[in-house]
Image (cartoon, rainbow, N blue to C red):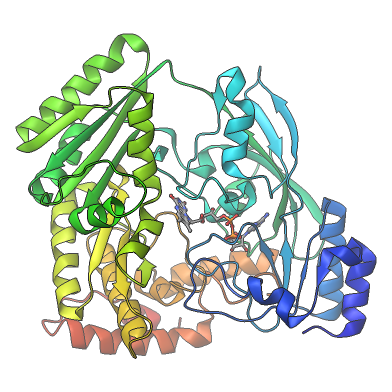
Length: 494
Ligand SMILES: Cc1cc2nc3c(=O)[nH]c(=O)nc-3n(C[C@H](O)[C@H](O)[C@H](O)COP(=O)(O)OP(=O)(O)OC[C@H]3O[C@@H](n4cnc5c(N)ncnc54)[C@H](O)[C@@H]3O)c2cc1C
């Protein structure tokens, strides 16, 4: 816990009811939705304005206290998990919609404003906020900005970085800066582009201007059942290479459908099929029906067992609810699970899904898959039982092997959940020493004392050797053929 003198100074800034400092009060902030690593914060503060955030951060600088921002804590890579008695700066009480400009299609929100609430608030006028993470009913736009969050409909509309146009940021020094501009392209360096996706390591966003879009005139949703995963994977590539840009293309495998079937969402998936595809197309009424028919034809060319268009909004909503609630549904078939988040070129779906199935067998743990297939953004859910000694560690190892497969296939270690604490070791698998050094230098410009979300995203040079040795021994164990592409030589001085 932080010293009583510091707690008193924090109370002075944000008022007594906006500070938690007892161990039993701060326990709920010891991790985010990545529960494998936990650590009690020194205290939690709830500022209500940019000025209060800046004063808290200045106090942290004076007293050399590490601090980190937190939204709703739904992050899946440990980004909002404290370390070293950090001060957690919760943005939960900065949850106001500050302005909406329908004519110019912009909204200004405080960082704790919940993603879905924005869409609900502007729906009456036929507008919505496009980035739609499955956690959108609770996650905040500040957290979305920090993670560059994606979602099912980001295939056509782009991820958070394509929708945030300006932000007010409290820098790690406590100074307040404005980046981006509500209108037009950035002038000078695109600093906003660096802030978005920086996982709370370059400052704290306290006001965010986003684009809001007009709802498309028409939407058609297609659900297709495939006996073989390979046919479903080929369908994804064929749809997109035919020139169609669906709003969303999502895939679920058999184990995932079994879990969803046990939840509240009874879609009636045939449980003997290997994969289901959910494809949504939208746009002007005139063309959407034809596009949906074309999608169905492509499914048929790839040996679909059954394919149908949602008959009404209720059916479409049921299909989407079953997809969006897939992660929690895994709890129906496994006491614990670890969500992974790798990216691959979508043309490699068949190959990488097969390899994941092999790795699952080798590690003796079941893996369910539900993912943004159109973007090649995989979410393997590794099922384990933490009560069995060693299973959690085995699940984490399997997760690492899966991410390495993604990198080997020409992809990446994260599509939308970020690096945080969880994947910091894999950064050395994906990037060369020079790449990492450049990223580290960038962080030092903003965060020279490393007080702001320390230990996340970019590995400290001293830890690279540790990661390198771990990777090397894993590579020898898993890949005796020597095919592993770990860029060992590049990390000697990382
Ligand atoms: C069931 C489930 C489904 C999910 N589905 C998706 C999905 O489809 N797509 C997707 O992208 N993610 C998904 N996620 C992950 C998560 O919801 C997103 O990463 C989300 O953007 C995190 O928002 P949050 O408000 O919970 O942020 P937190 O978890 O509180 O914080 C996330 C990171 O942002 C930083 N941060 C928070 N607020 C600020 C701020 N104001 N300024 C600077 N940094 C800040 C934190 O320090 C931390 O590093 C899912 C999570 C769950 C549990």
